Length: 162
Image (cartoon, rainbow, N blue to C red):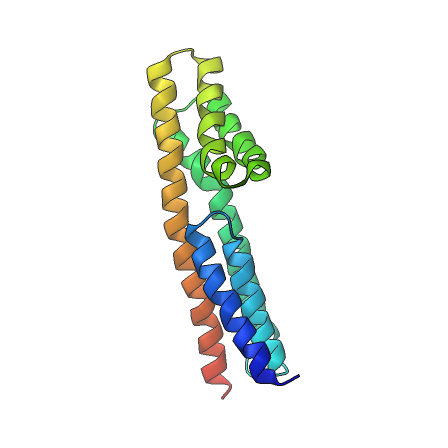
């Protein structure tokens, strides 16, 4: 098949990946990495090789870590109990099985439930839920920045080896 077809598919994957950094339905960093890997492969890894892809892969891993840690950090910032932090983590993992609503609400619900179990006060539990949600918002921005860094890394290696 013509390498230009692979490159066109790679561009589509990267665009979908960038959208996925802010839309939790799509695995953003994974799609960006897949698109960039496909583009490198389509050119026989002559312009972007192992080192470039390793850096891009490390950025992808960082994106996953940011996504997981952000909701817990947001909850902690508003004085969440350890049980609320565990609840945010468990809610985030459980939310993956319930599509977009679960992804958006799972960490918040988990944090609120954990805070209610730990301290019983609804006002504090609501603050923890809002803090968790704000953490997710910060994570979306951070993941978008990381996706741009992934693309920039690819471009830098591409230009350096042209």
